[in-house]
Length: 213
Image (cartoon, rainbow, N blue to C red; front, top):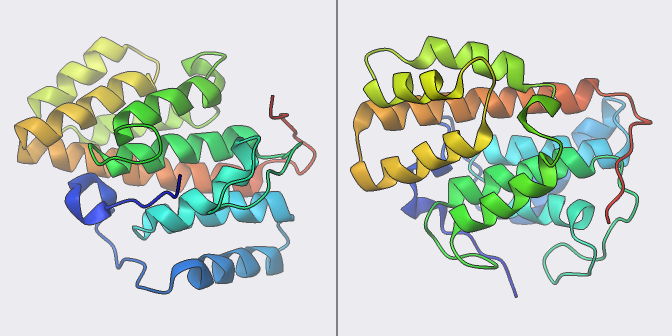
């Protein structure tokens, strides 16, 4: 089915910086072209551009970029699959964030949070310790706690490792409680997560490959 996010309905869909305007796929392709000009290969440029789109509130644009790298069938919005993509895991991680930012809005297969859980299974199937950005994200999250009780409880429950499923659950809960401090914590962590993921994608060796099954 055609994917269409409704980001204006979810507070998690923005990082608090100027957002992508109604330039649609043209804006996404300009980002890809810019990253190609910086020396990134095609797969890496698309995955990194998807992260930039998420930073700018472009959920649909990001989703269209990562779907061919993670989904083994053609789609009307992403086109044919890119079998053997060198950025499968990173594109799947983007998928996690796309649907978390979508929140309770309906997407491809139910709510955004349900979809996000599915993509966590794809991106983090080897366990929470397996993604290289998690140690830094866990450390940086401490700096966003402030007086937020929920975030302190979250990090205490996580222990020394970053657990993406627990963070997703907090994001889901805060849309119900609407606690301002918790919302700010979730958005701050999510913004840092995107920054770290972008840096990781751009720094990763070009020959790292994880196949789509």
